[in-house]
Amino acid sequence: MEAFNEYVVTMEDHVVASRNDKEIESIGFEIKMLSKDLEATKREGKKDAEKIEALTEDWRRVHLENEALTSQMVAQRSRIAALEVKRDRDIRRASCIACRDIAAKYREFLESLKDRWESKKKKVSAEILLQEVTANIDLLAELKDGGLAVDAELARLKGMEGYCKDLVASTAMPDWSISKLDLPRVSDDSVDQVRGSSVPDDSVSS
Image (cartoon, rainbow, N blue to C red; front, side, top):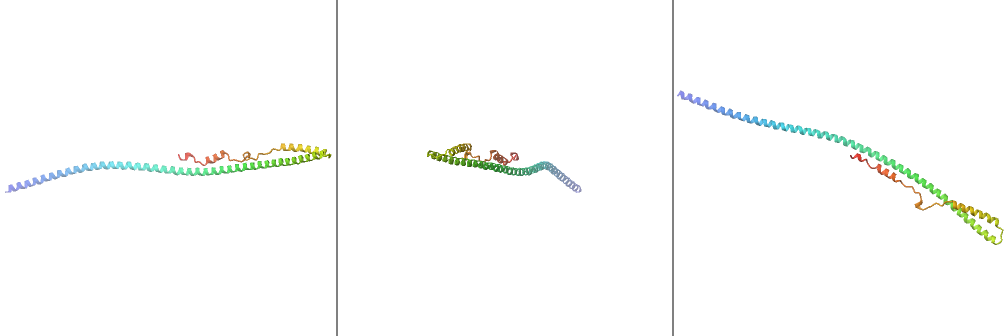
C-alpha cells in the first residue's frame, strides 16, 4: 500500500512537473510573440518618428520662406509708396511748368494782338486822311474849273495825297482770321511728359 501511495505521489509530481513545463513553454512562446510585436512596433514608431521629423523640417522651411516673402512684400509696398509720392511730385511739377508755359504764350499772344491793333489804327488813320485829302483835291479841282486860283492848294494836297498813299501802302494790314492768329497751344511733348510721369514703373510689379 505504501508503495502504491508512493507511486501515486510520484505520478502526481510528474504530472505537475509536466504541466509546469507546458505552461513555461506557452509563456515563452507568448513572450516571443510579444517580443516580435514589440520589435515591429519599434520599427513602425521609428518610421513615424522619421516622418514627423521630415514634416517638421518641411514646416520650418515653409515658415522661413513665408517670413522671407513677407519681408519682401513689406519692402515692395514701401518702394511702391515712394514711387507714388515721386510720381505725384513729378506730375505737380510738370503741371506747374505747363501752366507757366501756357501763361507765357498767352502773354505773347496778347502782345501780338496789341501790335496788330496798333497797326490797324495806323492804317485806318491813314485811310481816313487819304479820303479827306482826295475829297479836298476833288473839291479844289471843281473850284479850279470854275475859274478860282487854287493851284497852290491843289499842288499841296496832291503832294499830301502821295504821302498818304505811301503811308497806307507801308502799313501792313494784319490778318484777323482765327486760323491766322497765333493762339498758344500746349505742346504734345508737355502732354506726353505729364502722362508718362503718371504711369508707375513696370519694374515695380516684377
